[in-house]
Length: 249
Ligand code: PGA
Image (cartoon, rainbow, N blue to C red; front, side, top):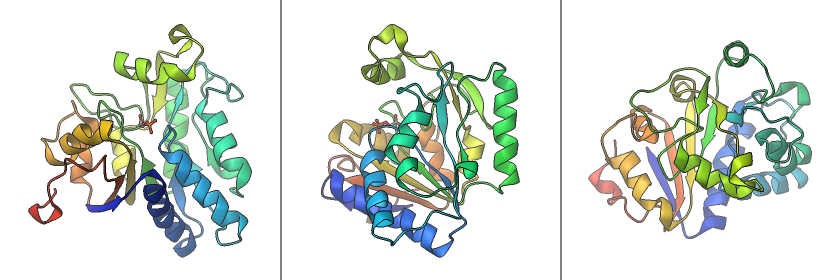
């Protein structure tokens, strides 16, 4: 694992955006795995800026989003589809036909998971996966549990995630109780993973994930088994990691 420590949120966004943009410049037809949440917003702003300046071209890229709420339409402002369109896709030039996000309104959850997995396999898997980390250690919506799920699945959201994300809905009762998420195998098969994290309230979970035991109780801990991970954080989020010379897994 490579650790990139930035002074603050803006700095970490620039570092993560640099890694993503290098990927797209070196391999224009990259398959990218975008993430949602508050952390990636500054990364997307930076990528959009470089795109507008003519330095970054997404016209050959393909994307597969990590997750989506179940039971919410793409045009619902709380959907991850809406988030991606408004915070990234409508400002850059990824061709619409190559943008993939689980369909939150699909009636048959299992069929939707199978459809998503088969599209991902057809595209040869993800070259660069962007991840955030939840305060409970989730990645995507892989919540702490007793076992890792492998491919895309329908997840019952944990109480802590419902509480954390309810702030985006007008009331907690409107917050969906289920979501689609790529499973651990799909994530771990990405050729390279960039995990972006900001803020002192994530410091404990970052330490647990990267220095603690590998366990489904801390889903992000499985990233210790991936051989190409960039952990990009600000000083506060990385404050509890031991000095790098002591080694991470
Ligand atoms: P956040 O979410 O970036 O909004 O903190 C991260 C996550 O829950 O994966």
